[in-house]
Image (tube, rainbow, N blue to C red):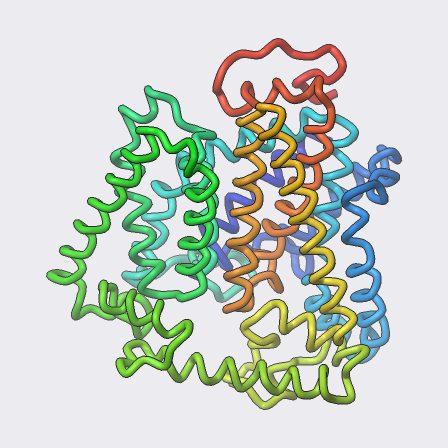
Length: 459
């Protein structure tokens, strides 16, 4: 059952990243893929009581204050809002994935290395697999939907795609997946695929673009003292691919509205990036109006929480914030939260909830970066790079969450909390010297002897 749970974790992660919202409806209403896998994980934990006990161990205990406070802001609204309260509470409820991953890894370190090995394959294939999905969506090819849903099977958000693209690119740039055989046979196609996906993402979404750029910059900064020819070669290949994409977009796609109301072009990419901090004269794709709408809503949330009557508790989980705040844009009232996950916490849990959320995030970053420093000091450079990847990927999630309704749904929430749990688990695994050599084996970078204290198998 433990192995089944791990396989299903990999399955739903792949589904959310490649199909988006269309995959989220897989299941039996009101229990969908995330909830069904979560129930299986809880069953595994109940059958292994030691997993439950480890949910209160350091450092995952840093999550509990935020979860407890959020629970207090949910329970009073269950009677009034019912399923809507539970739906909004998924924002913090998916944290159970973090506890489960952490507890299972502490029970058997092999779980950690299996998940890292799976991500290694994902990093190699994601840019190649996501392109057909993007093309189908952009060309508006009629696609079936899952039973009980009107959403097409492929319903990607380019902000989400930018986050996962950042994760795989950083993974490769840090040398956690490359071998000379792979570099010779697949690197050119991989780089071209990455560039194409980034071009579409940057044309369509500011948050995903900024997530990608910042994550890659952080990764390159960590490599600066030891940049080698492989990294330089990939960088040159990326620049050349970007030039090719620019030429194609200017000559073929510049007059075609493929991404919503925004054309796929270098000009649109520049407009999106500048609009993050500036009011641009060129309002291609309606980026300025969108920016003003968000800032007005965020200002109102700050007004009724930090300076208003909802300072301590917020408005709770269950109420439709877009409707009551006067910023609803959909007749069906499908928009429920502001386009900023941090503002969602403030609006629903008040200032104490936001403080506990930030404390949890700072705690995670502190323990991961501290472990990275220890690994570098000990000469465990593979582990050091893994901690850098965890931090950069995590940062990409938070950046995109500042521009979109991202962590509130399973497409962003489930991968985010899995990453939180994996980061906490990595710190504990690295603290066990007997398990450290197994990372190279999981990444396919050499056959290391299996320590008898922690076999690389699931028991």
